Image (cartoon, rainbow, N blue to C red; front, side):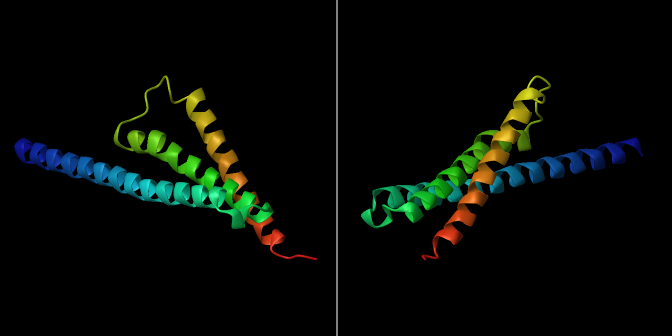
Length: 122
């Protein structure tokens, strides 16, 4: 009976480990695709003369902040999805990275708001 329980526990552990790796791979692929799209849009907006106005600057800031958020996800969230965060990093560094992500997301939200307000000319 103990052997059957050990085999079942080992099988459950392998399935859980495979699920975690698949989650990390999916997170990495989605973040990588978003990072590439945001970087490409940033460079197109910055280099194209049509976007040399306030709308272009706001959309460039929006693309840049989204790209940095996705880069942080790739470098910070994906590895800790597979491995657990060491105790040395789970305190202050983790909180600072979270604050940076909140700030960058707030920048992206404000850029959306200002882009919407900028579309109406008086």
